[in-house]
Amino acid sequence: MPHANLQLPPLLRATTFRLALSYLGIFTVSAMALLALVSWSTSVFIEWQVQETVEAEATGLSEQYRARGIRGLAEVIAGRASEDLDRRAVYLLTGPGGVRIAGNLYGWPAEDIDSAGWIRFSIERMGSENFATEVLGRTYFLPDEHQLLVGRSLHEAKRVKSAINRALGWGLALTILLGIVGGYFTSRHMLQRVEAMNRTARRIIGGDMKSRMRISGTRDEFDQLSAGFNEMMDEIERLVESIRTVTDNVAHDLRTPLNRLRSRIDVALLSEADCDSLRRTLEETLAEADNILATFNAILTIANAESGQRLHSFEPLDPARLAEDVTELYEPLAEEKNVGLCCRAQAGLEVSGDRHLLFQALANMVDNAVKYTPEGGNVTVEVKQDDGRVTIAVADSGPGIPADQRSRVLERFVRLDSTRTTPGNGLGLSLVSAVSRLHGASLSLEDNQPGLRLVLRFPAS
Ligand SMILES: Nc1ncnc2c1ncn2[C@@H]1O[C@H](COP(=O)(O)OP(=O)(O)OP(=O)(O)O)[C@@H](O)[C@H]1O
Ligand SMILES: [Mg+2]
Image (cartoon, rainbow, N blue to C red; front, side, top):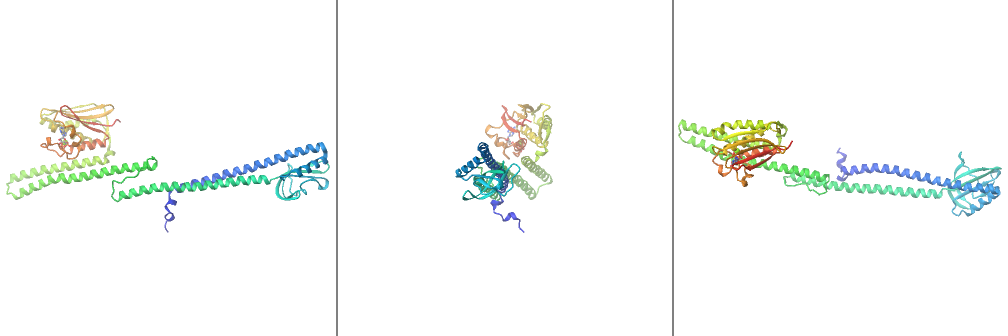
């Protein structure tokens, strides 16, 4: 059997609508409880008012009785009964044996009298007219077996009560109606926005990577969700683009050395070379293969740094140690080239990072400095704290990089014409840039006058 939800129209399946309905349910119950309380207290109040009136009237009559005796009382009652055009007051004065002396009631009601003397009964007629109503009355025993009943019709009170109840009922019905209509429109609005998001998601799944969620500008949850989603898509697009670039570059840049490798082997096979020249060809081929491998490794390391996967291998590192190790590694090369290499590192600092990638990045910076600085020049590696931020700088006295080329050299496979004769793939600074991004550090290329000064500034911890 299919799930019941599947058969409902989308609007009724909407979470908002169901939420609105359950709130409406709770609200209706509490509103009904409130209305019942209001209705009950109104009826209590109205009855209390009737009782007050009856008692006030009885007090008046008792004064008459005291002043004028039973005859006087009978006259007053007869007068009042005939004056009561609204037919609200009920009187009955009886003598011994229950004989009616005065009043607009024909006989004593059969209903029980409570301990306080109150009686509640219904009548069909009042005076000479048909008038069905309920009456609340008070009974008094007078001397000589006389009995007095003073009452009030509850007709008016009942009308007021039912008018109030009707108003409350309408109020409740209106509340429920507004709740349902409100729930319907809110849900429809929400559903439309979710549907728009679904459409965008489907467009993206269909291959339109440029598609983005619409942002209404109200900064509500949907806007926040859309903004987060759009940011995610920007990042995914950037990654896909960078993978595509890497793939293109790999294909393009490795084809040349691979072709060279192939033709070298081809020529060697075709020529009737002697053993020595074959050996030489093999050595050159080996160097070429090493170069291709180095390029591969560099590309993979850059991709690795850019993927962000290394974030979980971050650990606290001593930047001075790192700088000293790299300097030590390049000392023989610098010495061979007659370039002065020194390291000035402030001890006791700490950065959080990936040891392997940071070592590789710093090595690339020093490698460039030593490689591009002519004989007799100087290279300095410096580690210090600047404005609360750990800074690693590599400065050389070489030709430097013109200001307009500084951002370009960070791109993959970019090499300046002036240095084309030196070996290299143009990937060293790309790795430095990727590693610095991974660490949230900033990388700047400055003029060392003369030479280049590369500065890595780590975020303040
Ligand atoms: N210290 C420097 N002084 C002068 N030019 C530099 C310096 N560092 C880099 N460059 C220029 O920037 C270009 C890019 O440097 P990058 O390190 O990315 O590649 P590479 O050194 O040519 O090759 P690789 O580092 O992959 O072996 C270099 O080819 C060079 O032209
Ligand atoms: Mg380099």
